[in-house]
Every structure is written in C-alpha cells, then in structure tokens.
Length: 335
Image (cartoon, rainbow, N blue to C red; front, side, top):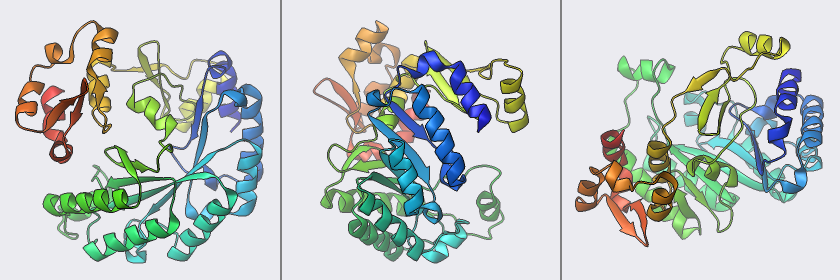
C-alpha cells in the first residue's frame, strides 16, 4: 500500500486531470478496513474529488458490511462492483467461490440501504449450468434491482483448472449453441426489467452506464497504478511489472515502474473496442481523428455489412443483433 501511494505521488501532475477512479483488478474489499481507510485518505489528498464523476471499488460479497460501506462513503466512493457470478451454490463451489446465497442477499441489502450505485457481476455458460439455473439468477436480479449488470459468458483460459478438467474430459464443455441461447434469454429478460444493453456484456438502468469502463471502450486516456497495471496516454500504452518483488524494488529505488511498452495500434483498437458498444463507432469522428476512413483501412468490413452482421445507422458502424453473436468472425478478420 505504501508503494501504491509512492507511485501515485510520482504521477501527481496527471492525477489532477482524472474524472473517474476504479479500484479493482483484484479484490480490494479483502484489505483490512483500517488499511483501506488510510489509503483512501491519501488518495483524496492527491485527487481533486470535486472533479470525480464516478468512483468505483470492486468487492466480494463476503466483505460487504456496514463499517466497510461507511469508510467508502466517507471517502467519496460512489459505486460498488460486486462479483456474484451465480445464485446456485453448487455452481459457486464449482467456480471456487466462498460466498453463499445468504451472504449475497445480505450484501445487496447493505448496498441498497447505503444508497450507493452498485453493479453485480454474473456468469453464464458455466459447465453444468441449466436453463433453470439461468432463470433463477435472472429472478434474483429482478429482486435485487441493481443499477448495473455485467453478465459475462465464461471463457476458458489456458493453464486453469477448469480448462484442464475439460481437456481431460472430466467436465463437459458448454456448447456454443446453448451459450448463444442463454445470451439471448439474458438480453430479453434484462430488457424487460428496464436494462439497456450498451456493451456486449454490460447492461444498465438509464443513466447508469459505467463512466470508467466507457473510457476504455472509447479508447480514451487512463493511468494505471499498481502491480501489473496498464496505462494509456500520449498514444502510448505501458504496463507495470507483474511480479510483486520487481514492482516494489522499482518503487523503492525510484526507477520508473512503467518501463514496459505494449503494442498499441489506435486505428485498429478504436474499431475493436468501439464495436463492442451497442451504438458502435462514429464514422465521421473516426475519419476526423485519423485522417482516413474505416472502410479505406479495413475494406473487408464491407462483406460483413452484406452478410448482415454489421450495419451503418446514423453515420455509426455497429453490429446487428445477429452480428453480436458472431462478432469473433469479424474481429479475427480485421486483426
């Protein structure tokens, strides 16, 4: 925590310009209350909190209690993003989660009483998940009535236990057709509950889009502080060390922690991340920014308009409903 504060001090000039804060990429709610209190106090001294339009912190349901919420509110945190994943205890155990349905219900009650804006993360297409399980999760979402929902399809990562079990045929993989059916059920049900789908996996009540995540999806500038954190500004992307000892040494000997540059292609990435938003990308703004049109750079996009996966609407290029489910075909073709 001292290293984080030292790194923030190094970037104090940049911190004066920020409009959103997101503490996550891990589980900050597991930090002792007195430590998070002290850290947030230091942060509030370095940032002009009057400029902050949204301040999010991630949480596990196990960690949400009234004392913790009180600390957040004292330090101007406006939003909590909580990882629920499922309201089926067998699925939670399968995913290695330690919370229970009762813990989630208690945490949501505390969040609602706090009057804080809150997001709930859910997963679908989990091996063993039935349609009844999915409907049950959606019924809980109706009951909880959060401001925002992030609903992700489970993606198998290399070198994970789940990937190993599927490769060894100890667990049955989830079929693509059923995953699509589940995705369509989620879209319909959340729409009926008054949620707008504004990005492939994100839904919100009107006016409650994640301002911080939109910065990523609009390929705007951001500063990452901490272990393995990425930053993007001045048309450059940098990443901090992923090994804690290297990160701490870099902070202590005052060497730059953002020493590793990452590949960054703004023309391509503006298209890739922009198309994940349901309102797509503004073709005129793209041409003005890069002095070249999207279709001049990526003429292969034309065939996906003909195939009905992409469309142009009010000078914006966006996926059709069908195209969202087949978007990987398009992304693979243009990368």
